[in-house]
Length: 371
Ligand SMILES: *Cc1c(COP(=O)(O)O)cnc(C)c1O
Image (tube, rainbow, N blue to C red; front, side, top):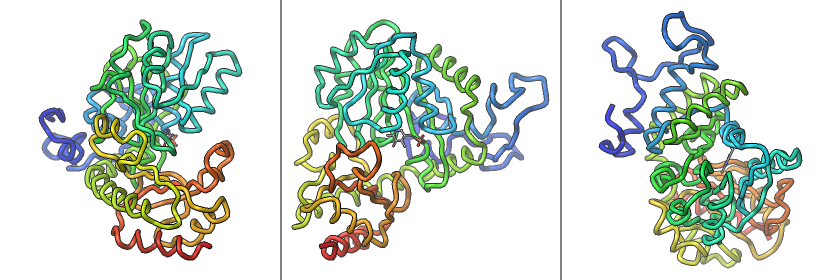
């Protein structure tokens, strides 16, 4: 199979990870197996993987231009990266960061496994300096839920402490909009639960790297912790990945339109979307990202009550957490325990693949009637 350097991503997503021998199924089969007949390297699935996990690793690894390790969830992939740190390591995390990652980092800091420092995502010079001293530099871009875009092109080129890991949570961008390894990062993380799965029906994660020793170490962590992907989940993720490019293009076109219209809406105080010229990191987004993504957040004139009312009134848009699926979902982020620091009326909208006019009608009606 041609690597994606010769095949465009949309074609790679369709063609990669398929069987190739005459008589084999056209599609990647679902292989439910814990163990295999002895005689090759593959004896037991937790150590050696299964053909279904490998298809997912081939697809995502090719897109990210590295070698991938599939995990049971995005957080399992994150935990495997943290697992690589030496005792007492220095970790630098963004101020706006996926709360599961913050929770994991702080839990480890409490047990004195590592030290955690937080840094504003926009502070490019601060990150460049952090690269020289930290053992793990953790970036997430665009960030959740403020959609800050990091100048990864600059930070990933900064000199790093020997052996340090620059990890990028690439979930919001997807490997189609941002390629952290190409820019110089050590490892890129995807929550497969989101865009790659794309249908809100599985949990999965992938870590991808070009560093052979780190790749081996991540596989070893998966083996020792047992954080292995489910077979059905890996099969569904492969199936979801086939349409990733189509879904992403459609949803991010729609997201741009909705963001522009929301910005003009009399009940909306502020819209955050990297594709809007008003976004604080729009210029960076234009430079670093191939597309502005499908997530936007907006604040209302009014407070938590009005925002909750909008969530209750939307019909086509579902009132649910998570993101990256075919269906649009929306929630008030500050309602989530641990997220109280966010503006009380901030709604995060994950745009799906529905018709843009139906989505706008739904949003507009909910905004008109909510107060
Ligand atoms: C969902 C998510 C994760 C965690 O992934 P799970 O599959 O839920 O474990 C990590 N980072 C980001 C940005 C996410 O959106």
